[in-house]
Amino acid sequence: MLLLRDTVGSTYFMETENDLQELGLYIVITIRTLFLASSILIIVSVWVPKKQLPCVYLILAPIEEFMEMIILIYICTKLDFEDVEGIVTKATVWIMFLALDVYFWFVIYSWYKQIASPSQS
Image (cartoon, rainbow, N blue to C red; front, side):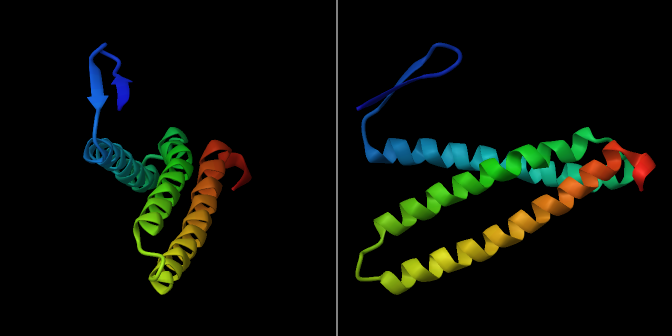
């Protein structure tokens, strides 16, 4: 049994694995929604060049990647060990997307640096 307390002071008991999965689902949905909003802020920063707009993405992208890594590990541990090909496929696809995400992070970082110091452009 896991005891959780939120900011309001309410106490929750996580008694089953389903409760933990539900909590994990809410965390994933929250982070994904924030990540989507930060991606929209990047598009907005093209027309309104404020350095705070891409900064949100630069902070949330590593958090989202860490969350995806935890989800991948969870999925791979829930699969049967007889399905090694499925585990390798999922890990390979995740590594390819990780490489793309790192590339996009550096692109957004260079955009952030360009907005922060416009005299160098």
